Image 1 (cartoon, rainbow, N blue to C red):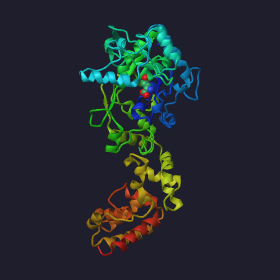
Image 2 (image 1 turned 135 degrees about the vertical axis):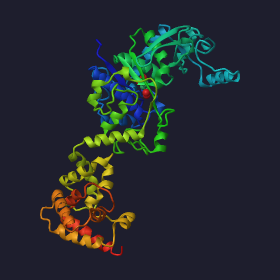
Image 3 (image 1 turned 180 degrees about the vertical axis):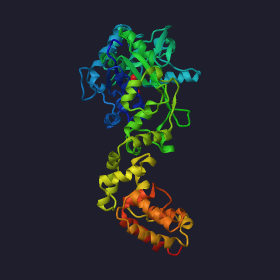
Image 4 (image 1 turned 180 degrees about the horizontal axis):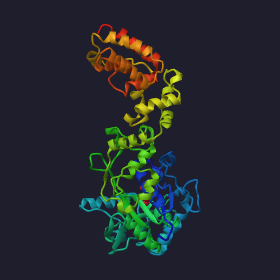
Length: 504
Ligand code: GLU
């Protein structure tokens, strides 16, 4: 590519960004970085009725969290700003008027009520009303009114809009990088509104003007914009501008496969659909996902590397990403797989980092400070992390390292606590008490030695020991646990059990 690649992510701040939006941003980012290009954030806020305060901040924070740093955007002007369409408001009208002058657009004065009536009349005859070549010459616009009448209406302050004049009988040849060639008959298109009576451009006009002025080379966006491609193509041609390349990304489908993934699916099945929390909806960040995991699973929703590899850091994705490997068909969303990804990234984290993430939760509990140091937590984490998908799983996997079990698994007690167990446990207390170097390997050696000297079986010692230390038949290597909780605590737990289970 000789021209510098410039792509844009152009969300409308109408609410929180769905993860599908983040996927669009990600693919734009990857494409730009792969080609040493620029990734631009443009806020498309021309629809004032749908504007939601806080949404822009949410979008920016979500991109930051995912590590998708934009090169240009609000607050980062590299000469193509402003990057909020509401701040560019003044410039669009001239472009709409230029199209009127060149015969590609026209003023329309039809009121909402009049258009509603036309719609109803058509419906009554079983037809659909479309504002285009079928009807435009029967309606109230600058094509049917004289130049003088038009001017008078405008000067008298009558509400007007500007519509695009779709050419008749043209077979439009369109191309999409992902979908290939398409042919569209211009007669099926309607004369879309370009400029509204509130003085604001519509999405279509503002989007094309800005893509042109910002020198966008590739438009990578969601499949829902594919129906607008023909109009956008015509707009570029009418302005006489070079047309960027287009790539429409596949939809993200519900876990069941059919239909677009929605907020409701997340609520029903209990998984986030937003990167960050928004009002009552939980985000990926707040649910304990690592941004690396989110970026990784999103990359594989609709794109594949052509190999079996599943784990990719952002920089690896930049190296291998290409639009050629983006599929046309929708990509099914699998909430279980997202957990798998988080599990993988959790395993990759250093124990120190995990300990740091876990520590605040421990500090809130009534636990002796001597065991909530990072050094100590790190050791605990190293023993349980293999079973964790999230940092929030740590407590249930490791509570017994920090406090004596409060409950004992009743079934396990019945099964493991036999008549001779108290005597064996009492002896074991003496054995443990006599160990001076209280480390996992050493305790194991001496306990095993004692078992064989006393001709006891492992089954008589190890399961009840685990039960009294952990509270259930779970957890890592028991001698590792003993070392970490220390001699005194090991003995206290056995003694407590001896009094608790005395009647068993
Ligand atoms: N503002 C549009 C949106 O909210 C942008 C579509 C496009 O990228 O052209 O998705």
